[in-house]
Image 1 (tube, helix red, strand yellow):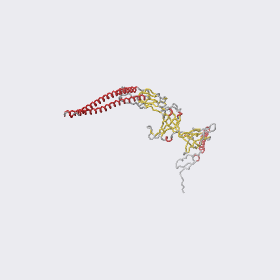
Image 2 (tube, rainbow, N blue to C red):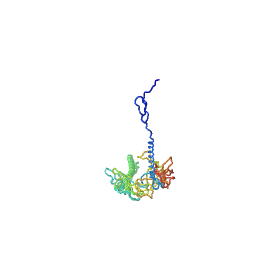
Image 3 (cartoon, rainbow, N blue to C red):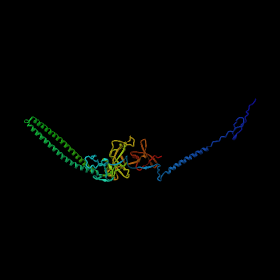
Image 4 (cartoon, rainbow, N blue to C red):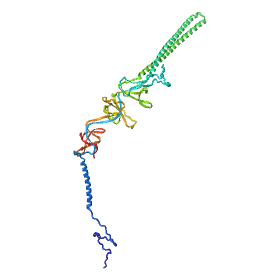
Length: 472
């Protein structure tokens, strides 16, 4: 029997007693030795991690322990506020201008008279280019702005020269027209009497002709015809003079009426000039403070002064009663629904921040108005507030800008908390109350609310310290 044997060498031991892996013919390849596991390295990493976590916890507890005051209580890390009791008001803020409820506007007088100088004697009112300067109003005397005046005091005077000359001219013309009228009546009486004498003479001639005609039977036919013709002529002459007398009567009456109308016209103009002179001195109808108005002078608006010319009917001065000061303001149409008459208000003046005055609403507009500087859908309602008369300061004058806090509702002697300290959870208000052990979430019941604060009806007491923002 024959035996078969492999020609591969017998494997020998490799490093560290491991057998060599046979690879067929050629040198044997020894594999890399497998390193044993090291459990100690993993344990070291775990230990380091535990030490880091423990260090962080130690730092946190150390920080918390250092955040304690000498009394042992925690110091808040957020802004806090100790609650106090007081009065809370719900208000609506408005802005307006000071004015007087009782005042008198002084307007330039309306000068009456004929501008054409009709029936005027002197014609002294005609200026250059035929202009009539009688009706110019030039201020010659004016009360000082802010002066206190009494009823009946003269506050303004205008130049009297033109009206005085006008009055003198018409006085002279009235005298002249009266004399002319008397002379005209005398002349017309003479003319009337002269014509009446002619009528009587014509009547006598007619009567004589009729008597002569009665002798016709004993006269010749030619003479009888002559007598008849004489009667007819005398009658025609008489009738003509009668008609002429009637027409002359009408003409004379008309001429006298014209002269009388001219005289009466001059008298009217004379009376108007006298009344105009009286109007040139303007007196105050009430007691109050003088407030000068502005007018257009030399291309700009300026306060009226002595030497200015004003137009008839133009308001240049006002007398205001300082005891009746009001605030005219505008309020948003939405907020106006909260306003009612007699609501109290706290009024402040921009010019005098130290002044606070009590007032009340005395008027609310019925119609909304729009502004040119706002959208058309934003409307405002005019509101008038009256300042308490007993509190009016002498510095309060018209045209000062002012603001007012109108009190809609109020709660007295209640716990007041700022709005930023109150939080909400599904309609349930709560605050963070400070305690010796930390912050406590405390549910409260709210009362009246304003723009900045709320009234706390239950859940908190006076002196409680609450957080002004949510604690971390």
